[in-house]
Length: 330
Image (cartoon, rainbow, N blue to C red; front, side, top):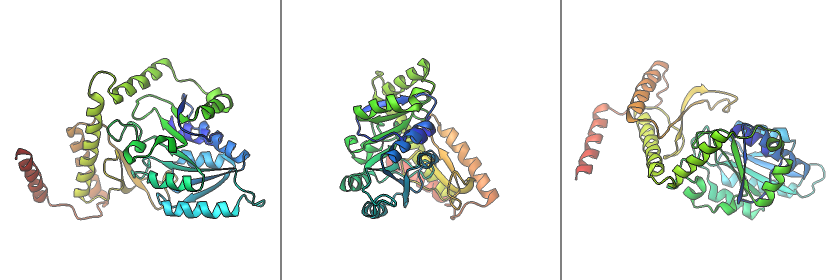
C-alpha cells in the first residue's frame, strides 16, 4: 500500500522519471530505505509541513537531516532551501550531496492541490530533486486521469521521483515508484522492500492492469471517461451542499478528498489544532448515496454544533436549482 511505499523507499531513492518499480503489500518500508540512502550520502530532506504520516516516518527513520516548509507555500520552500544550502551540512558545513523536496499531489488530509509548477521551478533553480506522492491524485484528476502533472501542466520529466498506490483508483494493493532506469535498477538490487516483501499476487496485478486499461480507454469503452466525469461531479456537488449547510469545507474544487473542520481525525494523524473529518468521494457513489450522507452529516452537524457558518435558506437553494434547470432548458 501507499503508506509502506512512502515510509520505506525514501531512504534509498534519488533519480529521474521514466521507469517504474512496483511493490506488493509492503509500502511503508520503501520510504525508510530511500531516506537512509540520502543520509548515507550526505543528503537533506525538505518536506511539506502537512505531508502524510508515511512520509514523516520515512524521513525520521532515515537519520537524514530533515527540515519542513510551510504547507503549500513555495516562497517559504525557497527560503528554507537557500538558508540550508548556504549553511551546508551540520558541523562540517560541507555542501549537501543530495537535496530532496517531498510534496503530495493532492494532500491526503487537506484536499488541496500541490502548487507543483512553482515547486518544480524552485527545485530546478537550486538543483534539488522533487519527490511527488500521487496516492490521491493518480487516476482521479484530469481528462486522462494521469494525475496532477497533467492537470497542472508539469512535464513528468521534471519530477524526479513519482510515488503512487494501487489501493485507491486501481482498486488493488501495493504501491509503485517511478524514476529513471538507473534508479529503478538500483532499487531492485538494494531495496529490502522489493527484495524481502511479498510480491503482488497475479489477481491483484491483473486488477491493476485492467484498471489502467479502463482509465486510458484501452478497454474499448468510455467507462474511464464516464467515471472521471462522475467523480468530479460527485465531489463538487457534495462540497457545494456541505457549504450550503454551514460546514467549513477545506481543499480545492474537483478534489475527491474534502476535509470538514471537526474533531474526528485527530492527533497524531493531523496537527494538534487542525483536527478534521475527511470525506472521500467515489465515482461509484450514486446521487441517492450522496443525498443520504448529506442528510445524516447535517443532523450530526446540528447535534454537535460544528456548522460554523449560517446555512443557506432552503427556499434560496430551491430557487437556485430552478434557475439552473431553466438555463439548461434554454
